[in-house]
Image (cartoon, rainbow, N blue to C red; front, top):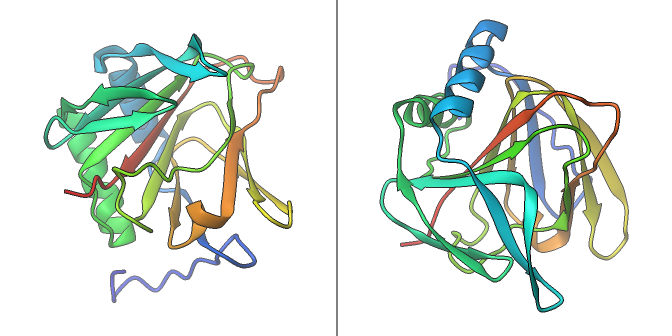
Length: 200
C-alpha cells in the first residue's frame, strides 16, 4: 500500500479472509469511457461450462487476457489468453497503484442485464497464485455481490457501483464462496474485470 495514502479500508469479512471494497476509483466520465471501449474492442465470447457432464453455453460473455498466452481452466474448459489491450493495461496500472498488488492476467465478464448472474463459486483454480489477490473492477450497471462462508454459511453482501474496485486476497477463496445474484430490476449491461496472477 502507498505509504503516503492515508485512506483506511475495512475488511468486509469477519474472519477467514480479506476483502476490501474501495468504492468508485474512476470518475463517472472515465468509467463510462472504459465501459464503452471494452464493449467495443474486447473479443467477447459466450462462456462454455460442463455441468453434470453436459456442456452448456452461458448467456453472459467472457474474455481472457494477459501478458502471455496463459492457459486457464475452469468449469472443465480451457482458455488461452489474448495479449493485453491498451485500455486493459491502463486499468491494470490504476488498480496496481491503488492496491499495491501486481497482476499478469484478467478474466472479463459481460452481463447483458440483471437476469444474467454467476452462481456460488470460489476462484481457486490450480493455475492461480496460491492466496494471491484478485481485483474486481465493475463498469456499467450497479449489481449486488454476495459472499458465503463454506462452513458457517454466513453471508456478506456488498453493492458494486460503477467504477468501483473490490479486492479479494489471503484465505478468502479457501473459506468463502461468492456469487453475482440475478435480478430483474437491472436492465442495463455490466462489465466486470477480474485481474489475477497466474503462477508461472
